[in-house]
Amino acid sequence: MTRFLMVLWLAVLAAPMALAGDLVETPSLEAAVKAGKLPAIAERLPKAPRVIDLAAMGKEPGRHGGRLKTLLGKQKDIRMITVYGYARLVGYDRDLNLNPDILESVDVEEGRIFTMHIRPGHKWSDGHPFTSEDFRYWWEDLANNKSLAPGGVPRELIVDGKPAKFELIDELTVRYTFDSPNPNFLPAIAAARPLYVYIASHYMKQFHEKYRPAGDLAEEVKKHKQRNWASLHRRLGRQYRPENPDLPTLQPWRNTTKPPADQFIFGRNPFYHRIDEKGQQLPYIDEVVVGLGSTSLIPSKAGTGESDLQARYLRFDNYTFLRANADKYKFNVLLWETAKGAQIALFPNLIANDVEWRKLFRDVRVRRALSLAIDRDEINQAVYFGLAKPSNNTVLANSPLFKDEYQTKWVQYDPEMANKLLDEAGLTKRDSDGFRLLGDGRVAEIIVETAGESTEESDVLELIRESWGKVGIKLFTRTTQRDVFRKRVRAGETIMSVFQGLDNAIPTPEMTPKELAPTDMEQLQWARWGQHFETSGKAGEPPEMEEAKTLLKLHAKWFKSTDSAEREAIWHEMLKIHADQVFTIGIVNTTFQPVVATRKLHNLPEKGFFNYNPGAYFGVYNMDTFWLDDGKGGG
Image 1 (spheres, rainbow, N blue to C red):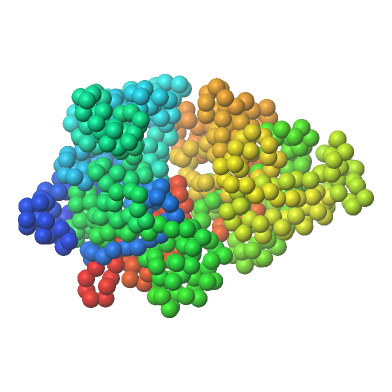
Image 2 (cartoon, rainbow, N blue to C red):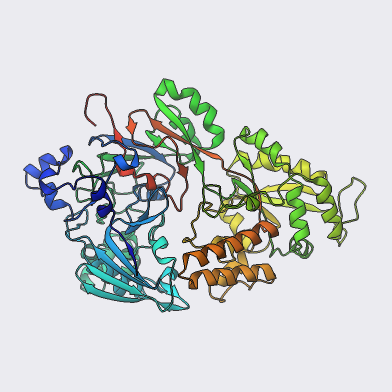
């Protein structure tokens, strides 16, 4: 049996436990406590709070108070505060190890039996106890209710077509049992957008037909202008996108603003479960103020001091402008490493409707040739000032799975070899301008489709156009909106697309290798094959290439394994296939994300990796421990 130790126990080894008498009341809550509107801190915290040992993390204990301003583009983007706050049942630390967080501990047996232990005395943000009833309600009355979840339980809770068995052991213990190992269960719970297996049942029951008289519920539906009780329940129960100020949360900050609004204020959760080693309840910052506006204006606003912490919507090409304004507006500009497999990658569409290009792209010689015909060093110097690394779309050097061959195979600039491979693939005929001809007589023109969200992409594609022209391939670009872009790829109308590479290029062997196999309809190189997997064969089409079939078999084998060494071996086999087969054509990786932070902000690391999942952007660095210094000894 594998036991995930409580972070609390780890903290005890390094620092004295903060006893009830050592707890420090949060200044901004003192008046409410004295007035009897809030219990004292010892009664608000779980009996065994999670202790964050800041010294062990290289941070300093902070001071309470202050408002932190940040900028987002749309109302739905307030979900980023759920990402940044990163309170999860279990979560990743900065070394990408999983630890209990909201939970006190988790027992894992045989990789398929997960027993979760809730912290005694843990409370929701409204002070109501957080118990196993919140898990039971989610499982029985939400996930298994056809009106609320017509598609059934989330796929992370299904293995081999069979859903988990849920057991309510006692008030503080629940268990999920699968017939076979489910190594993706805990990582899904720890994700930036987590698998929620709980919800504030005491609040949500008032919007459920099982617990509310039909007449009363009908009035609520009318009041909120919803179609029926199910749509009402779904709207008011969004945890990831916290638009409902009344929905209790376990996150460090809770939304206090009713939409629609141009500014959302997230106030501290007075019942939050974490403390520092000095007995101060986290978070340190009282409020996070989210301003909404045009994404195109956010770099200029961040560069004139309108945001205290900003990375979203900033690009590397904003760095010079931001750095020039840093001293005037008293902010720092940090450069964190991105964790994508490629900053920019090309995706030959292996399911393209164009018969000639589909046949060519399924020929590995063509994919290798197109990769060899790209001068990545030139792109690195011209676009990234030499700071990036020419590379395949693969894992990064700070992943334990990294091997140099995965990064370098078929990436050297070798137009002579590229020409030879294209000739061998049958593209020997050329027109009067030297461009190759397809089997049906057309000029070999590749239209690369883009979502048009970055001038960086257009700059890179222009350089690729020049180098591909030298081997007889024409390149054109077509820009569409992202939703249209995705639909065209899935429909096979796109020949080739450009986008970022692997979402998670810093995996450990315990993380799913699903990005390396056709498992998702959003995968641009084989969308319909991924759709076939996602829908268990109900839509899309099965892979036709043997290498893709092999990747699916290896993916399935990884899921069945409970041995870490075997999982690591599977990862390496899949990475080796990808490097050799060039299913996607990575250009560069190890690029940088500008992070703007007011100089009053403490405990934000100078160096870090900036990634959605895993990482939750600022989440793994414990944003609840960031604090503001007003220069007067207070927050």
